[in-house]
Image 1 (tube, rainbow, N blue to C red):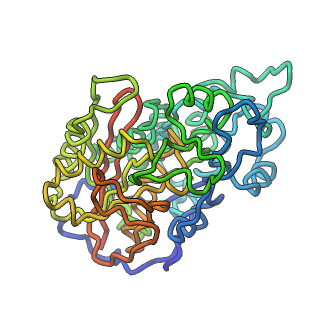
Image 2 (cartoon, rainbow, N blue to C red):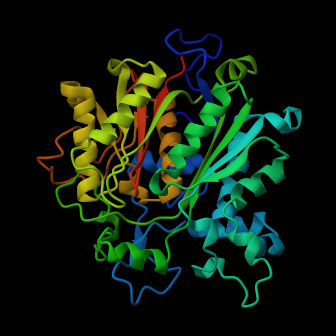
Length: 430
């Protein structure tokens, strides 16, 4: 397997004629999740199908129905203590610190010389489901009793603001909150900013640290979480007949987006290009997806139309795949609605089977892993897929990664509570 920072086999001397001149390149990736504290580690463990769900240790779950989750590795907290001063740790939440660390990794990975960029043409767009204003929810993120920095911590825009300040970026900088679709929307808006010519660079951030007592109690009251406490590694099982709810997790990711022509000009490493996206609001139910899947299907069709990518070029869908009964069923129906009989030739997988559901971070983590699939020619598996569901009868890449050297284009789906839908189309750069 090629290293994440290696040159790979993609030529950067010529442009794929099938890719639009308005396409936007992904040239840098940063990631922190239950599988690792840097993108290569996270990706490598995804490909190996390693589970990141464990019994919760960072707070007391005695009175919680669900006692499992996707906690960050212990080395994350060592990294946090090393990278941030005591004062900055008090001024920020874990979510903001994760965002800053992912941005640092992604910028270094991109090879960009920040000081040579026009700061007014650089944007920071963050997607978060709400953890940016939840300090003190776990033992590693507890403010003092009299916390003079509470306002700074609880600013919803804090992550975007801190990243902008650190790198001196003076273009658009704001936060999007659309539940589980937040990260996908952040990538889509960042993509539009670069594609339109309004800017040269956009940092798309997805981050959430909602694995806490309050969130667990709230989602348990909605019967949305898995209660498979005895076997945590088996708890997240998207599309499996025995799926029983999603598993909350903490994490974050950043992708660096720049116009493809500029990336080629500076001979950047190009993981993939984004060629289009689609968004919609289901206007159906605050919690449940529209049962026929037609609104998810509409979103996917809008993304394909925006990218002008023929359906036949799509070989892989990075599914939202939460491991809840209705989401997985509706997404499967939607894929069949869009692709008809060709749906059965598609490879479909969900990284949530390994890392759990990172809410606002999910869309960026999955966009990044989709780009890595196109770059490396490998699709991570859906682990814990042991008993096929007759209603979910597609190819979910069960339990083992798959080599796909001919993969040309892929789609990444994000579908959030409230009916907020987003689909991204990514293509391999040749």
